[in-house]
Length: 386
Image 1: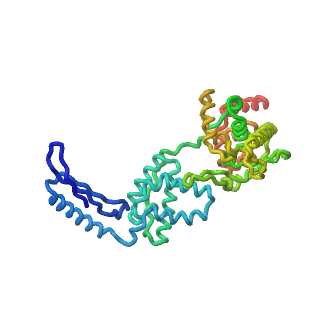
Image 2: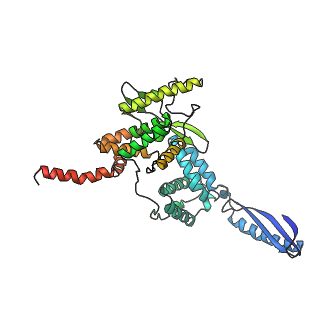
Image 3: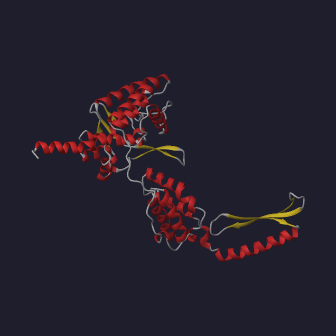
């Protein structure tokens, strides 16, 4: 409770006050009050005491023992159990969804004070702005189910919301390069960037590895004699802890062994020789069994920003369509189809968990292939005399 005398712009003496009322039992945030313009300190005190009286009357009605658990607190308890049920990469992804989308909406509210109206308002916003809105609803619902089980609240308001149409959801999009565009891109990288950069993009385009699989690739995963590459792990960065971690591949199907062509083998061998000579000059031994194929200049983990910057430079300089790092995986997939590889072999090579993912990409094959369909059909009909 603070009272202070001040002067107005016209030179008159007035009084103002500030008072901390306590924590709001609905939001968990601090309630504070400021007023000014009083002729005397006694007048200011009288008004403040009346406000305090009304505030405490309302708070006594709302306050109960269960009010002490905020949504944020319950979420932390739920995450402890959830972490034991899923892969590390999944857990990190879900924590990011809580941090970026869920907690900003609910964290300061007590769990048993969140009603259907509040949930519906938030859900409406999510479905208008976020493609994974359904996942957010399910995560919040799981927190409420946990809270009910623990006795923190009685019901799950997410069970009663109406899920609107996701106006933000876009059709599946698989940006990729055609054969000629890929040749221009790789040739440009080879001419303008480092040997490491060229080798990384070559491997992405010729194997279809995910970026985390590429960054986690070790020399022991490559059998140059058998011409195979094994995918055994993925590298991911924990934004919250600011740490790199190895984890299992995305799905069970993602753990795979694929064949690699002679051009890719030659690129990798050339890079391995350069890597060994470079680090030998720095006094760093890169002959260990778990040595990563691609590292920073200090032999540390790579970050995807390295590849993103190169993509930006090359696409702008050569006026190529901009694609993401993941776009090279789609490029490999579409070129496999163009080369005549059947869908099930493509699925196995890319480590898709189900054929639908492969089929989704198949619908985005190059324009050249789509335009060929009618010509091939015409040739077929003429051959058969129709």
